[in-house]
Image: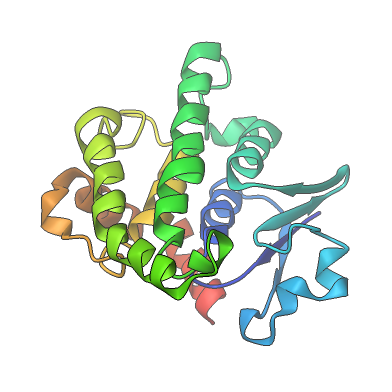
Length: 206
């Protein structure tokens, strides 16, 4: 059985939803950021990066959301969470999730994690001011070029969908006007109605 290490209001929600979508047997462990638990020896022994999520499996621990989502999809092929029989389409799904991880999430993180990149308070403040613009630019690309509807990849629900949904939860907090992105908001609403999504959110916030 797998164990998901998570914290509320983080990208760990994406993998949590995917585990529910796959009807996987799993347990969860909540990491308390308020107590800095992610940087304590017990958790660093699981994930030396000191971040969530982490997914403990029979073969070892996985980190990084795109890798975890791909692992879940490949481990539960009957759930059809990725186009596993089409190398190009699967690569497209991986490319989308990689963009969320390496570009959108980094732009978002400048709002509250500026000390990862600078020590100067003025520089951190400048980064925070830039967030609405930089995050909006990411969503411009997603809205216009990447989101096919009704799901990210088109007619088929995939591991891209819980990841985009998770990131889109933070639009307003990042100072982004959601009315600029009707496709993204429609997707967010559609996702929020899924039982697996509701169950994962309830557990994370419970």
